[in-house]
Amino acid sequence: MENTPDPAVREMLGHMEKMGCETCFDRFDKQKPHCNFGMAGVCCRNCNIGPCRITKKSPRGVCGADADLIVARNLLRWVAAGVAAHGARGREIMLALRAAGAGVLDMPISGVEKLKKQPLSWESPQKEGLSTDWQW
Image (cartoon, rainbow, N blue to C red):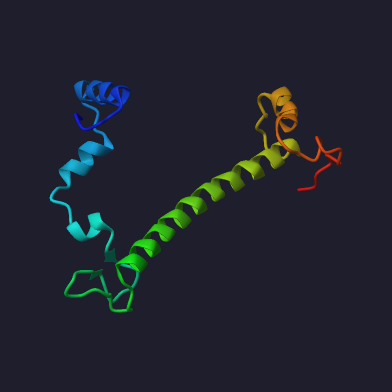
C-alpha cells in the first residue's frame, strides 16, 4: 500500500483493509511467488505444444516466435477479448432499447427527454440536417 502514489487510493485501500474486504492486490500478493516468464510477458500458451518460455538459451518458441512477437500477440489477444466483451454488451443494450422503443419489451426507457437531447451534443445526422428516421 505504501507503493501507491495516489493518496486517495492509499486511503481507500486502508479503509477496505479495516473492513476486511479483499482487493485484487491482496489476491495478487497471495499468488506469490509469481512466474518470472509470465510477469515478463514471455510465456506463450497460444497452442497445445507449449507453454513456451523464452530465455537466452531458447530465444524462440516452437513456432519460431521470439519474445517481442509473443508479447505483442498476447497483448492483442487480451485487447481483442476486452473489445469483444464490450461490443457484446453494447449490442445487447442497443437491442433492448430497440425492443423497448417498439413496445416489444416491457421495459420503460427512463430519461426520455435527456435521450432526445443527447444527439445535439455530438456529431449526429440531426445536427447535420439529415433524416433522423433511423431504421434498425
